[in-house]
Length: 225
Image (cartoon, rainbow, N blue to C red; front, side, top):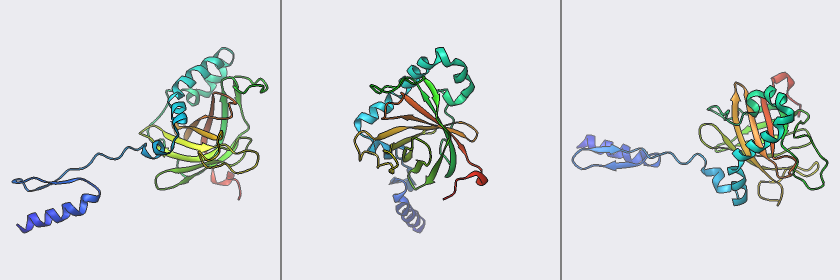
């Protein structure tokens, strides 16, 4: 009887972390609940239009690569896993710290009246920073012409979802959803050892996709404060 009472007490104590059930005639037993949806955090924050854009990401990959391949097949091949949409390894979380960010614009510009740009082009290298938090990671591109900033949310075994915004001029980027027309979203995937990519669907319509190659910055090369 005392043994059953002790087990019942332990069962109740663990109820905050797992479901607990008592079965008559067979003594106490514990039933572990299924873990919460790892994508719940970003699904609660994303707006409906952006959710549709995120769902369209595989189709954007196909069309952007198709537009670039006739003229830039060799450049696409040199990028290897970075521009392979099927490449997504397990454990995509970025360790906190400084990274080199090299951006590739893929596909034709979609802005009316904008100067014509090649369907494959790269931007000057930049620095970005990843910070660690409890349920998400902060992500900020610190230098360069385009400086999206926001949060990375876990979403399964092979990707994290980025919800952020693009700044205007030299101002800091606004919070996601705060300024109409500034939202930026995408996914982070690990494509090789110490090599990640952030595939961004930019709101500025400069290209269907902006793909950032992220590689850790050695301590002696990190930018100063």
